[in-house]
Image (cartoon, rainbow, N blue to C red; front, side, top):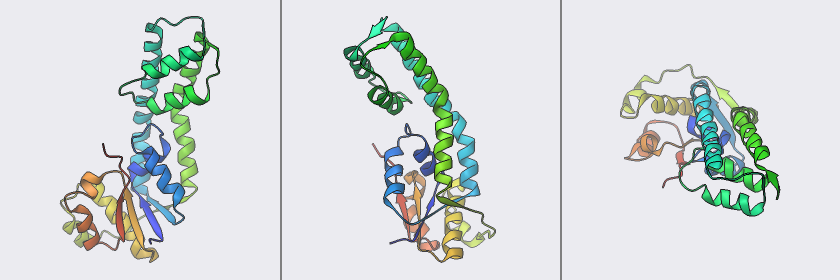
Length: 219
């Protein structure tokens, strides 16, 4: 069993955003394992670049829900049957689907004024990015941020079919394994470029990694 895990950017995003497709598997993976965790400066940089736009997409999903709520003709005081109907009507793709279902399940009382509900939904939208920031801080306390100095040009060449951003993560994870001596696996949410089509086997053949684990929630 590996002693350490290197997390790619998708795993960090999955942990921090509960509306991420891979959130449950990423949370489960991190909660169920006791090994050392590593990320690189590349992972942190990629995460910080993607966090604002993802938070905005989820917030927009909440504002879209508010618009649909207004168009549905609800008014005045809502009861549990009204909120149950609202939840049932949240069918189809919405970037904030998980957040909205959790919100209605855990935070809405049996009776609530429509205006109060909309105010709470607006607050929920405004808090999306701050919640992600808090989750990231929780995760960062559990991981070691790794900085690679070695280029590993020969390994880079042998993994040349893998896109550069993912190949760079492979090299970072390999460096962790080499420098720490830990049996290290790479956890990813991108099986297309890291696992499928023989990529996993190629990575394991040319690096010191013990395994490449996909946490993707495939449809």
